[in-house]
Amino acid sequence: MSPGIDLQASFIELLEGFGLTPGVAKIVWMPLPMVVIVGAVTVLALVSTWLERKISAAAQQRIGPEYMGPFGMLVPVADVLKLLFKENMYPAKTDPLLFAVAPLLVFIPVFLSFLIVPFGQNLVITNLNIGIFLWVSLSSIAPIGLLMAGYSSNNKYSLLGGLRAAAQSISYEIPLALSILAVVMMSNSLSTIDIVNQQADYGILSWNVWRQPVGFVIFWIAALAECERLPFDLPEAEEELVAGYQTEYSAVKFMLFYAGSYANLVLSALLVAVLYLGGWEFPIPVSILANWIGVSESTPWLQVITGTLGIVMTLFKAYLLLFLAILLRWTVPRVRIDQLLDLGWKFLLPVSLVNLLLTAGLKLAFPVAFGG
Image (cartoon, rainbow, N blue to C red; front, side, top):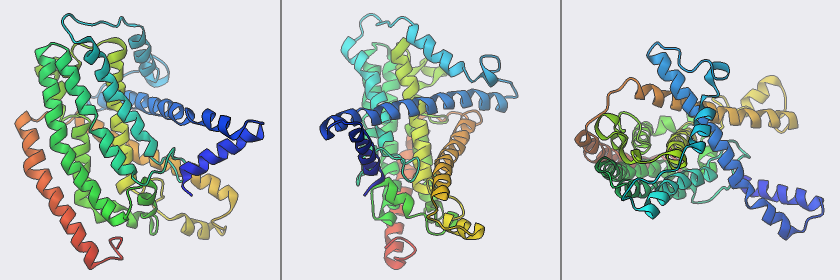
């Protein structure tokens, strides 16, 4: 039984113990996963904005946020409060319906994608057999919202930003999907839980990053492009397009774009950790550690400790990648739009296709090493 189903069944059984009928218990359960996900992802995104400020300050030999809370940690909260209370404006001659719907099309798919991310061995909302396919499908919705935002704003800079976002997304989604297919081929599953379990046998030596180094690099580059991070932030290039598709947005609508952007970055880092870095698995297998200290792997207190540390391990790997992404933003110059598209179509696409074919050949030749 999948970890997601176990969590649901345990909660429903708990509510039934308080006298609720199974039907009512299921109704109570239904909104909880999304509430938990929205809360957790919001916190992760806010932490990312604080890290962005502190790491950029360190890269430029500044102090950064310092006085608003300890080490400036309340600055993201102040940002949210400011945007919540700002006036919600509609510029003249905009398309009101498209203008209002566009931020939701960017925000909602990113948060839905977190449903399939396993933070720990027994901490996943739903263990779908097509989890990775669901994420790829949801990630293709956001560019529609960006294009819609640029078109509905009635602003030439916004329109150019929306067109760039659509072109950039199409260019990098195919290499991204091909690099994922190579991992799926080795794992024989589209489930994120199965992909992590397949990397658990020999600790760090069994992580997919060693068997798919080219796929790892392609995925990370394409993920940065999908998140519109420097050096790939052409859709919102401040020096050229003011703020691109966000130019005419303010208040809550701008906050949805802002939160969606950082949530997407955290999601990409988590998926890299799950697909290539073993997810919640330790560099040294738990069975070996248990033998060293002379206890059984099934000991309850050891399971609690390893489960908790597994969550920490997943977040540590993700935020290490996030640190690299932030450092890249403040050290690498922005590329031109033609260089961006050339990199996607003329380099990453053929390399990712060759990597997929090579993986298929190696799987046939060495089925044990490549998940045959």
